[in-house]
Amino acid sequence: MGSGRAPTCHEPYILDRILRMYAIEAEQESDGRWIAEVPELPGVLAYGQSREEAVRRAQVLSLRVLAERLEHGEALPQVENVFSIVA
Image (cartoon, rainbow, N blue to C red):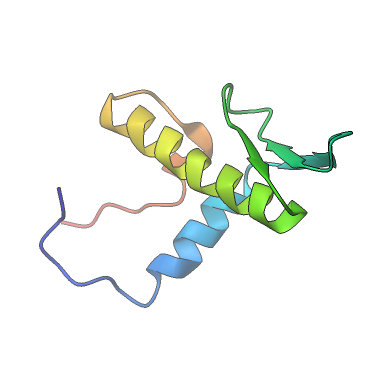
């Protein structure tokens, strides 16, 4: 469901700002894989062959979880201040 408009130059900045609001904890497992977790978002846990891959996957999953919560009307105080509604 797109908005029917082209992305603005500010959207990458907004996504970066949202992702920086949530801490990602990453550590290497005994088998060599990396695991990344966002403690503030229950269920956001991702594995990768490298730290970067695990973190990137956790970021992607975080955005999906946040979008799902917004779509279902759940309050996200940390995100509500990112957007401004104009007439």
